Structure formats: structure tokens, C-alpha cells
Length: 62
Image 1 (tube, rainbow, N blue to C red):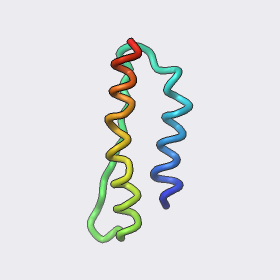
Image 2 (cartoon, one colour):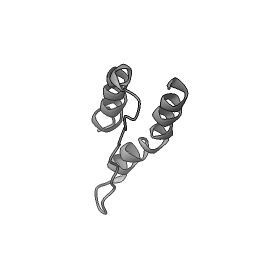
Image 3 (tube, one colour):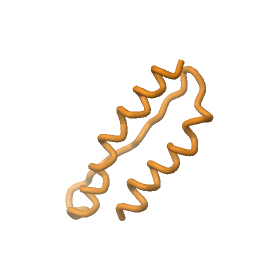
Image 4 (cartoon, one colour):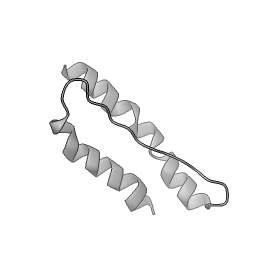
């Protein structure tokens, strides 16, 4: 579950990042439904800290 939800998003962003141009956006959709289990909630919660990183790097790149 962690591999799909976190590593998948991370490595996809890592490969796509050089292709992003000025004005590009990166959007992670993170949702945690009730009753999905602790593992799923933790995996989705791990994406939250990833969100500001590309924003900061894109700002300094352009």
C-alpha cells in the first residue's frame, strides 16, 4: 500500500519534474475515508509533507 500511494507519487514527480515549465502545477490528491484502515490512512498521510517541496523548488528554478 505504501509503495503505490507514496513511492508511486514520489517517483512519478521525480521523473516529471524536469519537464515542468514556468507556471506548471503539481497536484497531489490525498483523501482518507472513514473505515479504510490505519495502513491506508498512514500511506496517504505520508503524501502531505511531499506537497510543499516541489512548490519551493519550482519557485527557485524560475
